Amino acid sequence: MRHPHYVFSFFHFPMTLTARLQGTNLYLIGMMGAGKSSTGTALAQALGYQFFDTDVVLETVAGRTIAEIFAQEGEDGFRQQETEVLAQLAAYRRLVIATGGGIVTQRRNWGHLHHGIVVWLDVPLAVLEQRLAGETGRPLLQRPDWRQTLADLVDQRQPLYAQADVRVPIAAGDTVEVITAQILSLVDERLRADAPANQLN
Image 1 (tube, rainbow, N blue to C red):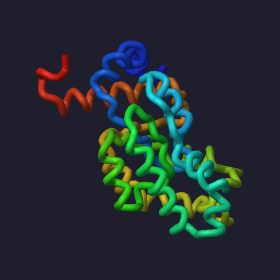
Image 2 (tube, helix red, strand yellow; image 1 turned 45 degrees about the vertical axis):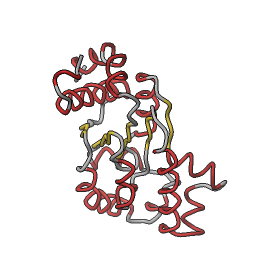
Image 3 (spheres, rainbow, N blue to C red; image 1 turned 180 degrees about the vertical axis):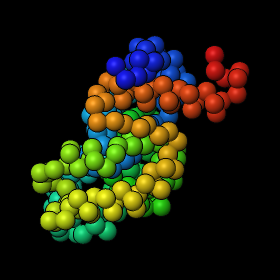
């Protein structure tokens, strides 16, 4: 297994980490196909948090799919509704929130994201291409040159993703369990680095 120390942390950190988080939300950012929803579900379970996916919440509230919103209102209309959903979720605590890949492109969203801990799932472009090949529900990729579009989006968004509090490098063979354990370990390290020594116990 690639990260034995992370797997160890998966079984030992959650209870103390949950206490140390004091209800702070975790926001998962990264490209489409990064695995934010599957990882977020496992992470929330490990921490005793609730899980939400901004895309799912938006579709439920709007009564339309993301593709339909894009088609009817364009990307600007979608982004506005996405911000409204993020603002509503940010008002709560003890949440793990998987965000849409482009949520970082709107400056106004960072005000909500920075109220929690932002975790970037950093997946190589080649892995994203493998995962997204043949998908029909991604409005921004509905074109013949979708691979180039994907590469361009990665280039544009990477500097924004890099503003995250925690970066989690992900390889092709990493399982949800390994990634979740890695996040727990890295978030714990970040909290310990930021907190005064007398607040760690």
